[in-house]
Length: 152
Image 1 (cartoon, rainbow, N blue to C red):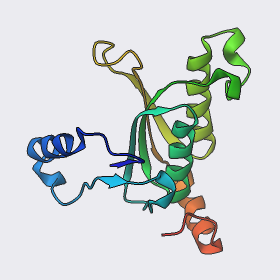
Image 2 (image 1 turned 135 degrees about the vertical axis):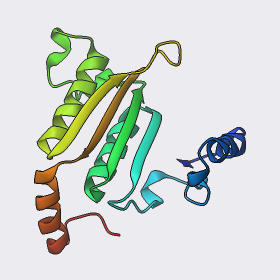
Image 3 (image 1 turned 180 degrees about the horizontal axis):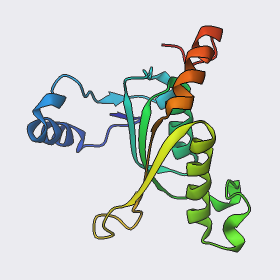
């Protein structure tokens, strides 16, 4: 788990994760750092919960660069920054941004799934799940050979 500043609850959260899912022991670490310092591997699952504004896009970009699976729960959509694909005239601006995120992933040969988690858990409840599809896997091998994939 990466956060520029680890919250006071981070150790409790880590213990709860490992107690709830024993196979995470030794596989999940707490890192007080920026995302840019973390190496992402194709075998990783990149998860971002309430990654504010453009941080969601950074998480998606980093995951795709590495060919990793990704799950994001976006929040704090910065409508002035754009990214709505011109759709906010038809639908809510925050939803338009998330729709365009899903479309961008599909354009990069990712298989996308969208889910809603209960609003009682969080009002920002749109879950975007994506994994490299067969087309991505073919093109990723070519990009890695050219040195255009994320450094390992």
